[in-house]
View 1 (cartoon, rainbow, N blue to C red):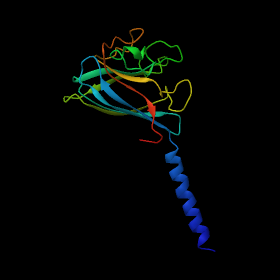
View 2: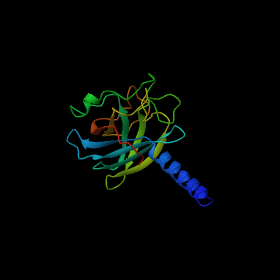
View 3: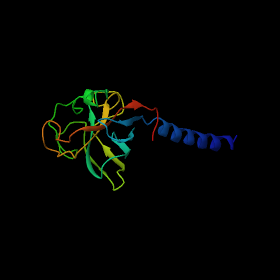
View 4: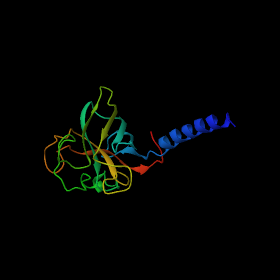
Length: 175
């Protein structure tokens, strides 16, 4: 009996640890090229314990330099991603940098492609959720733009054409 109690406690601790990892909500989008570009990649979203969402982007086929990177209001990449609509903006705020107090929930700013045209970046945000609710990224499009977002022009930062697009869907786990 004395051996069973410690063993049971160890199993419960292990099970609780696994449950907390498995219970993290995850979502992802596979981005395909639009507008004749060669841009493609994936973006993964993981909701963390503190309410932040970790965003991990892996993209290829870009020109070196900065490119606007946003969540758009609709989950439709048709017509060279024009069907995705404007930036995801459930709070009806002005466009701005992700560090500004007031900005669209979908304003992720810019990603920077290296000399090979690749982006491999991870960042966190409080602007969106993976869980259901008004700020959930699920069902919305991720769009990579031709040019850099100037982080101030209204309504969308003057980032140019839409070079890749993918719709965010739940994945059921952490990444």
